[in-house]
Length: 477
Image 1 (cartoon, rainbow, N blue to C red):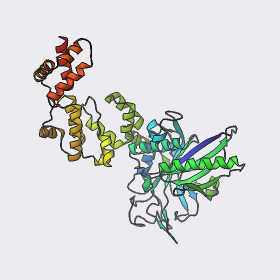
Image 2 (image 1 turned 90 degrees about the horizontal axis):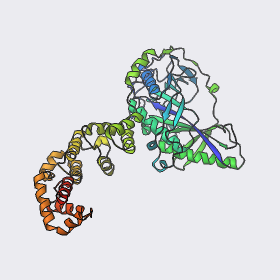
Image 3 (image 1 turned 135 degrees about the vertical axis):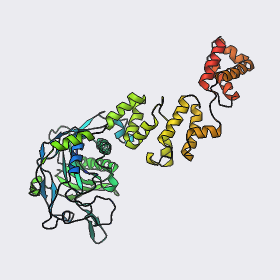
């Protein structure tokens, strides 16, 4: 029996605001527990919420970047439930009038896991969205050996929930979706999307059905995934678990499960509540929001997105689509590249490999962009050869010195003086009459031997391209 997998994701994104969604408490990861709280985010009686306009603008900006329809009017609702991490016993969220609807996230080849990039089912697939709504985050629970502690610093942090259509078909596509989405969020400056800090979290909805069945299978949710690779592993396990259960003739029921990354298994948490269990109703303390003013500001903030940057890098810098993808994947690297590549004819070098081998990121790079530009221009102008450029680059990376200073210090400037190279070519032709005669007789490979002799005679300093041109001219003349 063949089975069809259908996956939908609910992605929670903490917004990069200085203060919380409905109060002035600062948003700061790693602060001492329960030091960034006030009567509003602790849900004390009589405390009234005040909307964070920057969070509203960031949500509208996200909607524009993802091609969403921005609602002219949205409102906030109370989602009622009792849980230790929600001190008010309700969460301020959006239910039937969210800020953004529709839109999509484009997947590109380099967003997939490396081991899956050669077997992509649908290239340039777009995963469509249902909505993006804005809400407040809850507190964070810490489970100790015999007790639980709660840190309310996180409670009230502005949180976007991005909900996809159920049209992801594999763990690898889910991985690519989250990678692509994270890039766009970082490009827009709306979130750092650091999963280790809880700034991006994901709930996965999975259903499996026989290929002969039209309706979707039972929706089973995996809650609170906090790494992109973990999402892939959890989905792979859960898909196989459901297939095995169906194969045994079992009936799957809607439920919520957790993921244990240590034992690499999902586990039952609870039966899934329906929306009506939360008893949504409009928050009486918050007025509806008109998006017209927010839209004008957000439109001015829309950046060049990764897809457009990849295309422009290919067009403007004549690099391969793969190299453009690698550069655009990291906004800091893309900015570095553009600064370093100004005026360069062939803006490519070994920087990325050097950083990887040294365990550094582009932000730790010992070579400034303008210094790399200087090196590239020395090679392009013929003052040093490509081989010499590798030597200079290694010294720059190790010492932080400029390219020009290293060339001068090591006296490795390439010899490009036509007269000097002609003299060397004359010596080589005179000393090697047989290869010279072979070339004249039609053996083109002999020219490489003669060029090698010129390089040897010049101690590697002669411009190889110029040497080859002069030898060919003299032998044909």
